[in-house]
Length: 178
Image 1 (cartoon, helix red, strand yellow):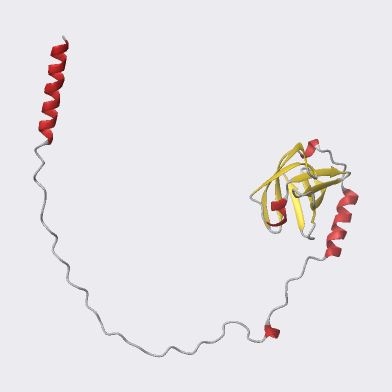
Image 2: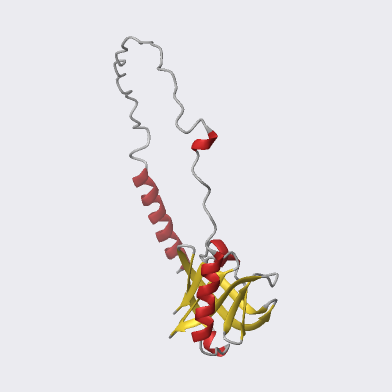
């Protein structure tokens, strides 16, 4: 019975190979016809007009440098927030928060894992001051956000249900919300 199977397999292979040979040797050897060259016009030359400065050439024409946010206004806002803020617990802060600071927004995740500066925090997609947040802690009514060296990045107070507002160490405003 093995001989019959091997003969059938051999016959099938021979038939398959013989069917593939009809296209061998019939290569298309025609070449495409060449294209006509594009017409070339004359080349013109002339002088360019003189350059003019695009910006002020006199240093006194430069605009004034931007100023830092008014530190006194930030301090007043923080004092008002602190007076009206309720006590905060660490357990109420665990989880994901949306952060708004410096005109951009991102996510910060707060956990109860011990870390330099308090407890572990991780930011995602943050820019500016918020990008350096890696730790957090609660001190009385305040939420303190810190960098990986334990330096304070921001101080916030609860301003509403699931919302905290405050200032960064640079004097800018920052808020956490869910």
